Amino acid sequence: MKKTKLSKKIIIAITLSAIVLLAYTLGWLETYFLAEKYMEKALNNYESGEFLKAIDGYEHYDEQKGEYTYWAGFVQISTMFSSSFSFPKSSISSDAHKMGLKTIIKLNDKELMSYFKKTMRQNNPLILYVCSELYHRIPKNADYFSTVFEKLGGNKENIEKYYLELHEFKQ
Image 1 (tube, rainbow, N blue to C red):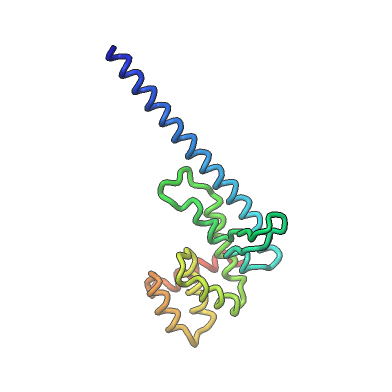
Image 2: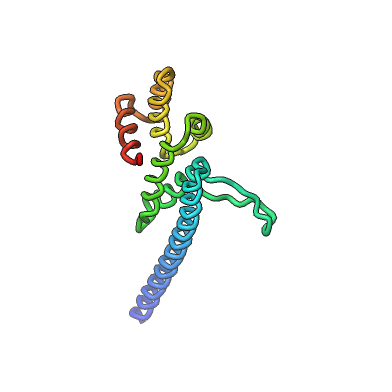
């Protein structure tokens, strides 16, 4: 009789574990396929010279649905698998991060400054790179960008490191 109770508990534990694993796998796959779809759109925007859309995504009106639809950019895609609980890590995140760096260089001064103003108060994994680029592009405001770089969590001594890393991707 004790074996029967123990067997039932083991079967319940295995069943619950299988359900949790299945739910996680389905969620991971859904995120992966969504990231692929977003990445394709972001790459198309990059190739057509729409760099702000490529890096930060955009909303557009979907006439069939009668609502606005959001398309993620490289920044959002790069964070889709950033949770420490996300396993396995997808290479699409690192690819999107690299494309985000390449895109920063492609932005003209006006676009880069606009992007900086829009995202400096958001959780943007590329903001220190943007700040280091502006530090070099607009030398008359170097002190300002150096201070902002530090306020955003960077060390002023590393502004050159970020700039050089950013320009490794220049083509």
